[in-house]
Amino acid sequence: MTQTLERATPESVGISSNTILELVDEVERTGQNAHSLMVVRHGRVAAEAWWAPMGPQVPHELFSLTKSFTATATAFAIDEGLLSLDDSVISFFPDEAPAMVGPNLAAMKVRHLLAMCTGHSEPTDDRVFGGQDRNLVRSFLSLPVEDPPGTRFIYKTGASHVLSAIVQKRTGLKLIDYLQPRLFEPLGIENVTWDQDSHGINMGGFGMHARTEDIARFGQLYLQKGVWGGRQLLRRDWVEAATSPQIATSANPVSNWDLGYGYQFWRGRHDSYRADGAFGQYAVVVPAQDLVVAITAGSGTLDKGLDCVWKVLLPGLQPAELPADPAANRALTERLAGLALVPQAGAVSSVLEGELDGAEFAVDPNPFGMTAIRFEFNPRGGVLAVSRNGKLRASRLCFGRGAWRDGRSTLVPQWRGQPLVASGAWPSPDCLEIDACFYTGPFRYTLRCDFSDGHVRLSTHVNVAFGPTDLGVLVAKRETHGATS
Image (cartoon, rainbow, N blue to C red; front, side, top):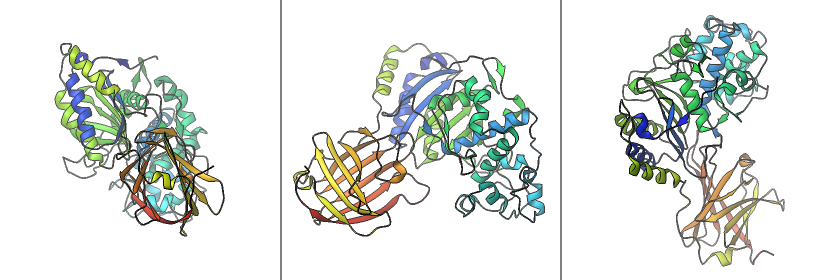
């Protein structure tokens, strides 16, 4: 079953190296905050780009791209006779079903979960994932189902999670374990991680982390109608059904989200389909061009990421091999080798540093329990340290001077254990800005420290979020002076 994605020059698969250069330029020009890009044509990798410190072996958070893997697990379970598209959802969960089961809930089938047409009249995720009940399946089944299933499309992550629970019920395995011999091992997908809920069920709609090439291989499997290494891993009729419109989303031909939905796959322009995750995570498949494009990013403008593919890459595809172009290929190789996330801009130092080095500031009461912040500076960069609830031990964020510095931080509890790079610079003599970039996911935090009034006002902004991107302002008053020991 061995099948690798061989590397090839762009010209050998009908793409000019200059087209790839234009694609990279367009991705950067439109501010996609790209982390990686892989272009696969005719089963061969024509280009792969990594914005350092992102790299080929680094798993990336996939968000809702996870849903397409959940659907694939469902497909294997169907093929093994463990369930069917027309099984009723409540039949799997006698203990979680509400006491009174209405006719619409009773009519909800596995196919309705897959196609996001469960009969709910409005989005449900806030109620499922934000409610008091930690049993997410029970929470989903408790919601009123206002319409007959199959009548309208309403995107909902809860439906994907119920699919995960169904597969686990019937197989006795979490999705990550069930897919290991059936999908991951045959495709050479390694070191996948997958978040789970409090009941030990892999999150069906998000939470998977995988490498960019893993995303590309997954898309290539679907492009090949379920065949990998000469073996039919997935049934061809499943692939065709999953990637065809099962429910209308709207009728806007220029939108990337209004061209129909399959079984946890979006339909797209140019007769394409894709596995799609928040903030720019994509496996885009264009069958007519024998093309797969895998992207990871931290983008708040999702249409622009896909439009870069439509605007630049597709027009540059040729039906036959192009003549070799060594000069253009060298230029492309050099360009890709130099890609990197851009560190914080500004002066690398300020006359204030001598005064601030070791200084501690008492923080006004705040909901984060922060009681003091301290600044330290050194030739490599500096440190922002935060104490909480009067404890002397501080959480630290180390940053480079106008350049990235690798590390980890517990400055914010949610950051614990996540790799990051951080850089600091002075956009003005009395303002320090520190960027903390979590390159295995989309998030990049900017901490702005304004010293203009003798105190410090610390404001935090994140580039992308499901809620507000401005995360509040802390005010702190100077408490001590002098250098650290």
